[in-house]
Picture 1 (cartoon, one colour):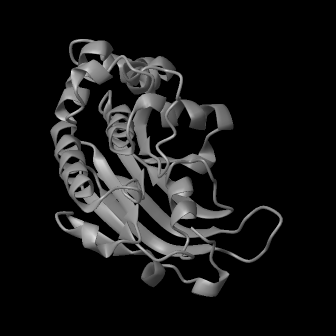
Picture 2: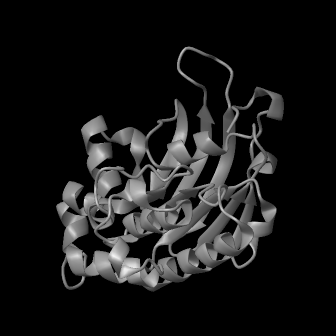
Length: 235
């Protein structure tokens, strides 16, 4: 599909040392700038799917193309560099560095990728501050170590880190699982708003179908996966 942010074809993945596939996806295209909700219960392969899209895992058969580039055609060092330059990831446990300040956590992608830093309008520090302000994090918290923040505040820092430098693709792995409903709903609205503002494609993975409202498209991973649920990983 022309203009696809993600194009998957004939994908089959089995964990190293095994022969039984956990994912078998015939085809999936996601258009650039789309916001897509990928749903599925535990055991359907959601974490494996995100790992393949992010190039952390490489399929033994088939293709996973992100912005036209097949991860399997790159050396490990090339995958690392491309991931830093073009992807933002919001992890379920946020994965902030607890001893770094809030601002320094947000700046990490720009420290790893000169091209990402170069896309920060007004400089990377100015963009980090703008993102934190838009995420509703109070300015006095910006210089605190990440470990001193509440769960909800850490989540907003993780989102700002994923969005800095306008990555082509943002992947979110169940980032709202530890939040109360009000905080969750505010965060979802902010995340979609900011992805729209910078033109990032958003792939949001969750077992909670109630969060699908407002997305351009919903993908049911178990329906797409040709592997029986009992053979899939525990996501």
